[in-house]
Image 1 (cartoon, rainbow, N blue to C red):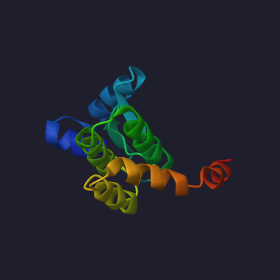
Image 2 (spheres, rainbow, N blue to C red):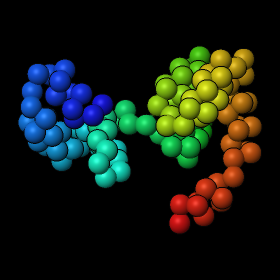
Image 3 (tube, rainbow, N blue to C red):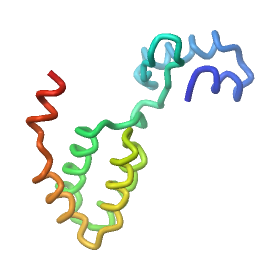
Image 4 (cartoon, one colour):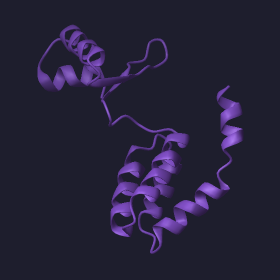
Amino acid sequence: MTAQALAESAKMTVQAVRADLAALESAGKARRQRAAVGQPHRWWRAGNQPLDGDEVMLHMALAAYHNSSADKLREVLADVGRRAKNPAHQKIVTLCATAREPHQVVWSALAEYDVSSTASQAA
C-alpha cells in the first residue's frame, strides 16, 4: 500500500501517515519498498513484504524440510505463492501447492535451481 492510499482510507494527511510509517519502520513493524524518484514507496507490514525468487526458493525448501505433512506444506506454499513479487513465481508456487506430492515437487525445483547464477547476478 502507498502512503497516499493509506491516508485516504484512514482520513489522515499524507504527512501524518508518512511520519507514522517511518516510526513503524524504525520499530521493525513495517517495511518500505523504495520506488524510483517521483514514484510512491510501497509499505508492508513486517513479515508480509513481497518475496524475490531466492526468498521464494528458501521458503519452499524450509517448509518442505520442516513439514512432513503434505497438507501443511501445501498451506505454506500457497502463502508463499501469494507473496512472490514475480507473477510467474506466483503461478508456479501456487501450482506446486496443488501437487499430489508437494515435497517431491519442491525438491525437484531446488535441484534445478541454479543458485550460483543468482548469486553472481546479485554481486
